Length: 208
Image (cartoon, rainbow, N blue to C red; front, top):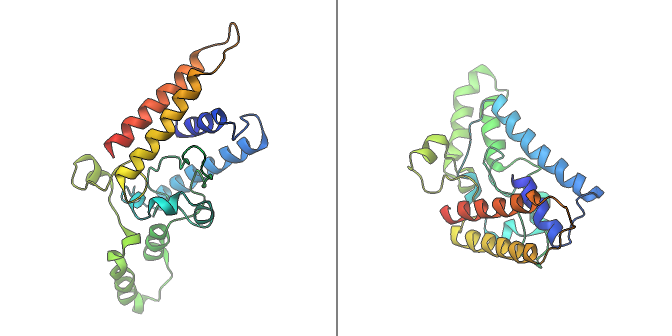
């Protein structure tokens, strides 16, 4: 849904041709994001729903920053598509590299260590757990409401700024759809689908 929603938003703005090569690159980035998440599970990693809170709004909106870095702390997050406000430069929409938490937890689980050094080395790695970029909260933290920072489909360390940004994106999309011309006999289900995506996205942003 996030992939489809992002394609519709950018196509409505005239920033992306749904049938062009850029759209294919867009989908490839999404598939890489999903593949990294699922490979993480095969390596034993659990969801990390606090990973989305480690960067600022300015960082996740910065194309240069997001081209070099993941925009959350972990690919094990359920991150929303990273969309710009209308008229702003476009950051990377999906995560195509690992976050700091991913490198850290894989080091703890898989780093080759001599048997005699294992206890000390694992203690050294684990001692970093208090670093802000290694924040962790998983399914139980989210479902039981134990940690208000462990949420799905939020982005950035300021939930109010995130919600405002998403509302601006969705309001702009609605205005563009109101002015959209439909060919005689054209199926209206696509228009209904994109507006339902926008409403659901706004509801999630409000809950963040």
